[in-house]
Length: 218
Image 1 (cartoon, helix red, strand yellow):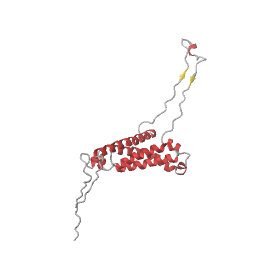
Image 2 (cartoon, rainbow, N blue to C red; image 1 turned 135 degrees about the horizontal axis):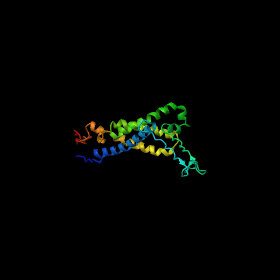
Image 3 (cartoon, helix red, strand yellow; image 1 turned 30 degrees about the horizontal axis):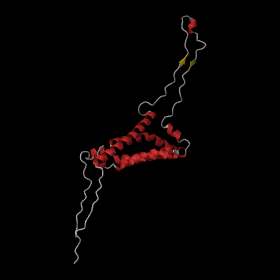
Image 4 (tube, rainbow, N blue to C red; image 1 turned 60 degrees about the vertical axis):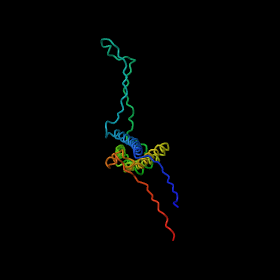
């Protein structure tokens, strides 16, 4: 007698749905990295023009009208106030150095902190660009995770617990990108175009099971 068999099939999202999900996650996290890095480079004067504080307005008292030498004499009620410029706002990387100035990280690992702050904008721009383009997605999402962990470590040193949930959300998004980084789930990218999966992703696997009759007993 042939035994009865039952197979439970589970429907999962197809290639297109998974690739669209990966595309949305890559664009979102990539834009955050890219704009953050460009903003830091602008403050450093590497890209564009750094923001300059505008001087305050000059207030000058009214001069009396009329001809003659008396017109040029200042009025006793006129007030001339020189323009005073507001204090210059700290820029990157001075802002980071100021945040960690009183911590053990700046006292014991000052050169390493300076190296990190100097390379951080370039790393953010590079990782953001790779994520947006979908190029080397597995590697770029791994580097993005390491970069996020380094930023989370900084907030832990500063004991700023308000930033923990936000950083964990970024890490979860990056974990989703890493999970969907294989070409079969990420063919709407340069990786998919370069590896030939953009137009027609192949089948991952086929399930097949043949029935084998039990051996007869003699």
